[in-house]
Amino acid sequence: MKLKNLLEPFGVKKYCTDGWGVDEWHLPPEKHEICKRKTQIIEHKHLNLRTRLKRLARKTIYLSKTEEMHDLVIGLFINRYEFGLNV
Image (cartoon, rainbow, N blue to C red; front, side, top):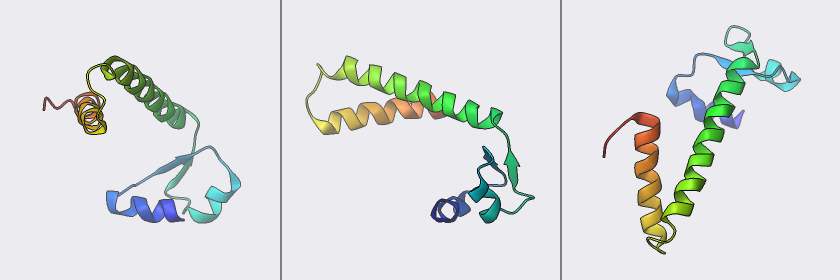
């Protein structure tokens, strides 16, 4: 329920879950879709992002030891990778 409340401001129209029983209790049937395919696509995207961030951290660790510099580099990477923004 906490996650559902956090997602409300983003205007989520459909919830795709793996069919676990609790989801059916808390989500209205018109907004709930049971499917693995969409969940797998999202999980694959997150896996790619985590892998690239780890690789980026390994490559940039010798450039700076400050936490601020790592945060800036990772923020720039996410803007480029996720949103296609050249910052």
